[in-house]
Amino acid sequence: MRDFTKDHRWLSMNTATVRKQGDLLEIIDACARHGIGAISPWRDQVAHVGLEAAVRTVKAHGMKLSGYCRGGMFPHGADQAQAMRDDNRRAVDEAKALDAPCLVLVVGGLPQYSRPGSPASRDLGAARTQVVDGIAELLDYARKVGMPLAIEPLHPMYAADRACVNTMRHALDICDALDPGKTGALGVAVDMYHVWWDPELLAQIKRAGKSRLHAFHVCDWLVPTNHLLEDRGMMGDGVIDIRAARAAVEAQGFDGFSEVEIFSQNWWAQPMDTVLETCIERHKSVV
Amino acid sequence: MRDFTKDHRWLSMNTATVRKQGDLLEIIDACARHGIGAISPWRDQVAHVGLEAAVRTVKAHGMKLSGYCRGGMFPHGADQAQAMRDDNRRAVDEAKALDAPCLVLVVGGLPQYSRPGSPASRDLGAARTQVVDGIAELLDYARKVGMPLAIEPLHPMYAADRACVNTMRHALDICDALDPGKTGALGVAVDMYHVWWDPELLAQIKRAGKSRLHAFHVCDWLVPTNHLLEDRGMMGDGVIDIRAARAAVEAQGFDGFSEVEIFSQNWWAQPMDTVLETCIERHKSVV
Image 1 (cartoon, helix red, strand yellow):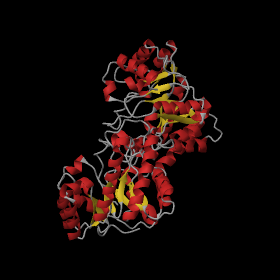
Image 2 (cartoon, one colour):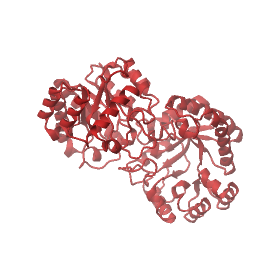
Image 3 (cartoon, chains in turn orange, purple):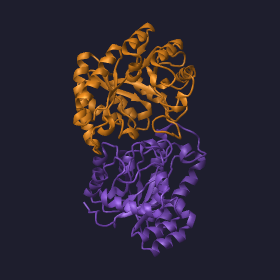
Image 4 (tube, chains in turn purple, blue):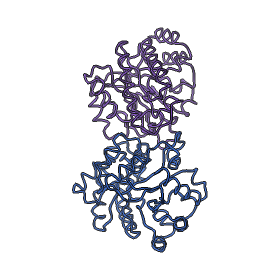
């Protein structure tokens, strides 16, 4: 297991963590100033400053990416099919332009939430079928472009509106079905916030193996949690045994970044430098 | 599958649904007035009016129980061991006095939340071991008394503080380990709020079979959900396909009550009669 206590060379900042404090170019500047060598940006943040400016600034700082957020939201009504397909292909192209190691997929929940305007449904099974079909189709395109896809299982509390793939087991079943050869074209993003509770977590990390462990995201689960979406905790402030999980992914050979992704009204209200400094400190002491 | 559209003979009210509108005796009176023939009371509600008065009022109305809430909260520090054991045995005794068909077990999360005063821990695996040990010990007692135990898998968002058994699969693994003969002494309470998202739900209901399906609880999952604990929805107001799940439990031979359990600041603010009338209407039209 790598020693994180002495420096933060393996720290990556998911740029949503400080999205309220500045635009993407300002976030990249701040990360560089703090010696942070990697980021994982969101599409809306890239769009806001323009893809070319984002690529230029990333390159100018020698910044690496640990992922690109995000493709997905596959369940859809018939009228949304073409837009869903085009949108996801653009996400792959943007990830490639930014030289991301993978495009993270938040697969979507019921169609009315994944692609607004779609007919309302309570059929989660049908949504899951559309997810598998959607990934299969996007995977063909992503293979040609050379962009690995990473399915991110989301916490079950997001099953209706954000992602109906909620466990590592389910995500890996999809990987087995669509990429049985374990080529690396399809894998998972292991975000501790979503999977920490799962009694099968360590077994499924082992099942995934290095070829399917595309990303490792950290934050913490607070007790109490006061908001379903925007009350994630800083590493060390909650109940997740992050180090045990990092040991498990590294035992499989994972040697990528530890990406901090915190959606939090509390941390969004802090100065950017405070958040980055705290992330660095906790990366060393807790992750 | 039973026809619920014509009457509400199979409706049970979990008394927490109207806990802010009256005490247990008032709730029983109101249920009887609305032709509701079963309840599932909580221990604190029973304690508030006294066990004898509760038993007397239940009998006077010919009211049945669909369960008794609740035993559990097994993870504990050494100083809390005896209190945990005594507390759970008292819960079994109360359930017996009230002639409940089962004692529902909310198994507890990390020890500092399950039994306050216990040392803080992030070791969910150790908590799960304490849960299995605690159920095993209580089961010996419950068998002697003749009170079936029902493990209720809780939504993963409660893994830290309320229950570290979060899937039907996990609950049934425990049943297999502790009651391999499927005697009926140990089973599960299937609460749709907690398990609706699980892609294995229908398969695990089949695995459970009649001998382990001790209770069936309904409400709905709202989008958005604004509070982790107190924003459950009335059946029909959310995204859960309740009828598909009822079909699955009845296909296994389950012929018990459909118990409405809604923790909701919204419904607690309504008059008791309004809540009961709405439950009856939705029981017929949605469940």
